[in-house]
Length: 133
Image (cartoon, rainbow, N blue to C red):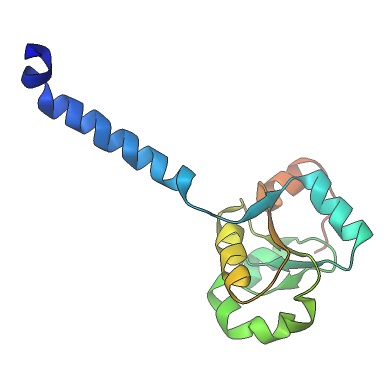
């Protein structure tokens, strides 16, 4: 008991920092798909790839037939994707962070099958998958 009283601040610090590390893991960020699952969706369904990177990043290389809608413009440009609501939508960014945010936004807008590419374009290019410039 004396140990707990003597080290209460240290114990509180450990508890708070541990909680701070758990918060991102507990937040719902939307569904993610692997590279294999994403290519299967692209090949089998009428899926749409939405690249949420900036226009400059998109121009440097993107997945074939991907539609570039930067994350900052996504809320204003949802009408461009209205026809895709019943079909799978794959959100892509550089590393998977922005696409996870886009997944949440699209789910809130009524899209039923939205996923984020795990690892983003970094993983895509790292596996040598095709990129269009």
